[in-house]
Image 1 (tube, rainbow, N blue to C red):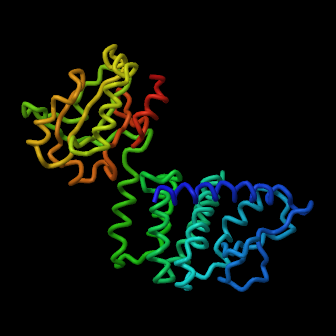
Image 2 (image 1 turned 60 degrees about the horizontal axis):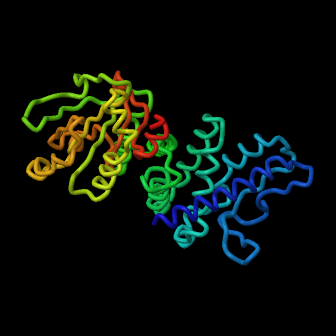
Image 3 (image 1 turned 90 degrees about the vertical axis):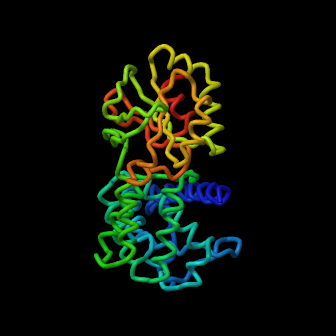
Length: 325
């Protein structure tokens, strides 16, 4: 899956380069991205005879690069037949086309135009029963999956908003998409982190809101000692001398929270947590109430002293780079 992510992302970057040349060329030798004479939904062939996405034609009278970019974004799906089930299952056409569309939307500077384009896209895909199954899953894969190099929760939230705007209140899909929208809207940079209850090894009850932070930043480390990735990240953190020095000197504080449901396992592995950290268990409260998005473990958040989110769901390396550790 990861290989597929990177292949599609690489192709998307190449497409953006080609599109930027088309945007800037205008009438001075520039050509439309695709021929407007092709029947709707009929995919084109590239130079090697392979099927490729049926891009819309950008009118030649449009010479301003930003105007051309906006036209392509809004009309991107004009020649695509959402009702063609065979086409939907051709990843070299549909999946790659979607990845290119995501890359175009991410690079567009006008949020209002991106919103209009997403509204058109979602309206069309929901009109097809099969596309309504395939397309949202692909968007989730590239914008929300923690392994995706194109992950962009802000854009994913806007996509969910557009889906929900076209969905009937009685539609069974609304519950899941509304849940995801609420989840990605929480604990974003600039927001105060959601409060939660946790318990120290001796049973003392504490909350994040009342936890004293005597350093410029607080690192939240949500983990499971039985998780292989958690163990690897924990070792990385313990072996980082610059980070250890920052904690020792009061420049950083760590709150590690066990989020699973086996307290005996948690207590048996407490010796792995450095002495200078605070460690507790939330007794599965965070997952039960969906207070934080724990789709992959471990999950790290960096907060300031007022519990405002500075970095959301990032790697330890990204935090060290941002903090200069």
